[in-house]
Every structure is written in structure tokens, then in C-alpha cells.
Image (cartoon, rainbow, N blue to C red; front, side):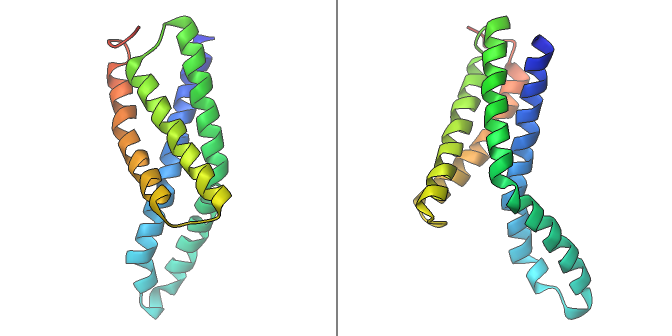
Length: 140
């Protein structure tokens, strides 16, 4: 069962990595791909197909990531106790997901919620790394 908990933690980690790609591929598209000369448009076509796939599955991967992290937290709590850095990362991940759901329900793809969603997502990078590095030391 402990192995399942570790597996779910890594599923949550890689889901989060894929979710961050959404921001970076859109940024690269705005800054570079749209400005490619006409003779390089075949690269833009390939890039946009990749971008479309990442954007299409952003919500689904987010749901999978949050479920994996919540299950990971529960299983690891049963086996080892609560990791303070892990709990902080999980809370921020769920808050980020809630902001995403809010944006989806409000159908407003701009605004303060989006800025907060992105800030929390980037803050989560540090929390996840901190959790991975210090998970054994900060336990309750």
C-alpha cells in the first residue's frame, strides 16, 4: 500500500508538470511561434498541434493530479503521518484547482482569479521541491 502512495505522489508530480506546460507553451507561441517567417510555418503547424493537445487536456490532467495528490496524502498519512511540506503543497494545489474551477464556471478567462491561479501554480513548484527534499524531517 505504501508503494501505491508513492506512485500516486509521482502521478501528482507529473500531472503538475504537464499542467505547467500549458502556461509555457502559450508563452512560447505568443513570443516566438506567431512571429516565425513564412518559410518556417511547417514548424508552427507542428507546435500548434502539440499546444492544442496540452490545452485540451489541461482540465482533465488537473483533476487527475488533485485526486492523485489527495489519495497520496491519505495513504501516506496512514503509513507515516503528516508531512508538513506535503500538506502545504496539497493545500496550495487544491486552492489552485479551485481557482481553475471558478474560472471555468464563471467563463471569464481573464481577471484576478487567473493571476492568482498562476501565482499559486508557480509557488507550488517550490513547495513540491521542498516536500520532496524534506519529507522525512518535517513529520507530525
